[in-house]
Image 1: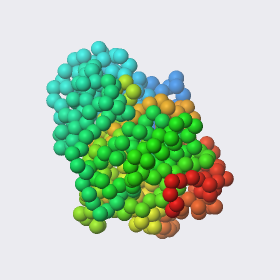
Image 2 (image 1 turned 45 degrees about the vertical axis):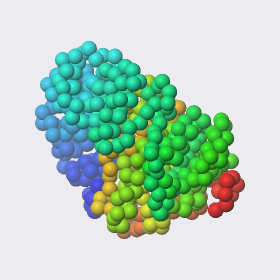
Image 3 (image 1 turned 90 degrees about the vertical axis):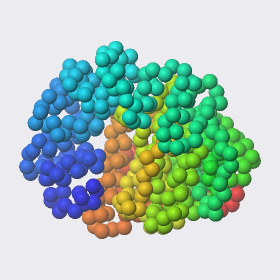
Image 4 (image 1 turned 135 degrees about the vertical axis):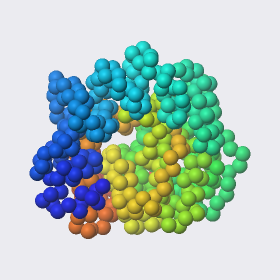
Length: 475
């Protein structure tokens, strides 16, 4: 879609109803608000309303009126699904109250899934008693099975059984729990024998104060059916026992390498330092609080081994909270693409389009968008299987007070960062310039595009880490 926007002459880029809509779909909400289409249409009207809601422009006292007016306007019916997809998770109470007053909307399985997920989280399921029976009459999607588990399954045994039923539908190996708690940190797996392959996969894991999760994360990688791995763990100046746990794991398995940073510079600086040590033909990443299904690497690398035309594969994840419930920030559906999942040809991608922007957060989305823009759908294979299980907890970067998605100022900061890199992509495409991210050393010298101040990593800290980081082995 960025290519389509870039193809417009600059004077019309955000002025036609179609380009205005495309800008909104790209997440250019401030750009939408800064421009007015030359022709006012229903599409341009709903585009602006979505941008206003995403940027929290509409005052709280008018929110319900504005949202309900749009939902009740039949002339906007063709845009309702996109409107709800974009805005529901920000204002769920307003949408659910509308659904309760207009129950015909609940005949749509997507809308009902949203409403039931919110209702379960907020203890108002009795308001949807009649709809629940109909919704769960057929378990025709993985998302229904997850929501059913959240609502009706109240023991860990039942929940792990449900999860394994989901995995069996994808012909994936079953998992078990090593503790009486259904959460990511207690998942475990057993494989009969790992397969030997000549092609090495480097896996980068960055960790900051991850003493409670890093062992499970790394064990899930060591227990892959694909054995030829190089696991590079970067300790981002933790002040807990993360480093000692990593070092103990490294002593037990020679596939592990560790790097210790003297200053905290964020996950994307840490990844950029870690990749300097990578020797694998392929590269992927994993978060320190995630669990990789034992077949994850094998399933993602196999298409690349069979088809040299492919550049990357991606996979999906399920997130589980500390209460043992499946979680999605957007409420429903639960099975979603894992932003850290791209597994790609390391040297090709690094040489042709570069890797990560060294911002505090959000750079995985920029990398993924650039990967798709540069190589196209025919060279990237999405694998829609739950190959990662991610922890949802309030201590994570995505949920922190400073960088979390539920803090309005933080959310706006993330939107500003997203918009700036999208505009950089469009500018490069318009000028027919290479869409390549410079390496970390170059980024300390030259700013690629403007980013919000709170996401800027101190350049002196980056240079210090580049020069003085510690590792178990030399490059």
